[in-house]
Image (cartoon, rainbow, N blue to C red; front, side):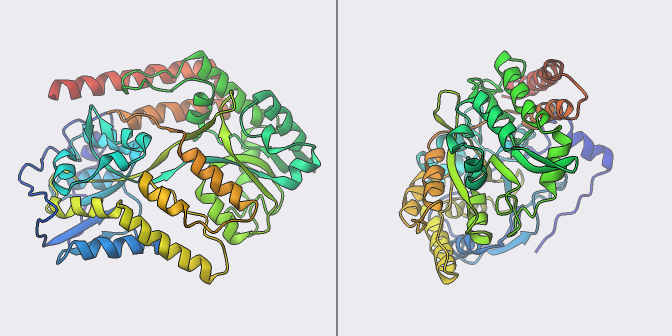
Length: 457
């Protein structure tokens, strides 16, 4: 099996990664013979995906059976964008790539991946089954460039004992009342020996800034992906509030240092050891907690906006076909099967069997396939509290998602936002100044990228 090497010089690689670099790839799939009955052969080199658990391997087994004589090989590890773009530019790309959905817009603009329209039509992929926000995140200028896979949403997770001791309930920390959350944060926070002993609330900056902005009624970027809205007064208000949560606990650095010292994935996690009051967190952490600390005093809810409505910032992964793929037909079928209801059913069966064998409940799997989600929800065995409420909240959140729309400068936009938030968290800039600078950088990148893309179109 071929393995891609980064053969370009450092300067060329930087050119590919910097700005929007439209035209990195350029080879299309016009010669591909997509079709559900197309006989496949050869090799399929997969980049960015590793079959590390039963959910992955169950789907891979099904995909490989439908690929027939195709030999599948994995390039181990997370997607390395530099390696991938170098491979595309050198004419030796992998055959299919597994990317974060927020990378799809930039990859499409660079010409590193091809539109999926012919693949979708040929293999008969029903895009209507995908969660709308997930599909929107891989759709650039009305062209679909990826097939969505997993979906991640946030839930409010809290330590019930700490809430009770402070005279609080989950409603005080679920996002519906920011004044109440600030008060709850102060009531829950504890210090000992000059340092934190209990984190009251963690607003999870910078990664959840889109969530807090949306909860305050504003999107960070326009629906068409062309206009940055980072300097909107509602964004400023959201940032100031989310940062104040850390300020009330001695500053972000103190909270982060204490947070990072926890055994996050083990039985000594911050909820099990009662050193964290509450935080928003992706739903997959429910399964982690139930697995390693099933007796932790947990309570769950969705994250809510300031009107009390459920809200979730959807992120996740997608399959895409690189420009110049040697086997786009096999790549397309792989993408279809890996995200199909049958594949997710196989994954859920495998996970249910594994959990049952361990004497533990099955808490579900969240995908970007709405039909698969509905089927898997009926298989859930977590019928005791607090896990039943956690699962119910997960599915409720998945029905109330938003995402940042695909755009040709998504990497630059994200960098501008995170740099701004981090500069405030680190005390290097005031919120208004940081957002104003981020707005200028983000809009400039968007204008340049869209101008190049429009000119090519």
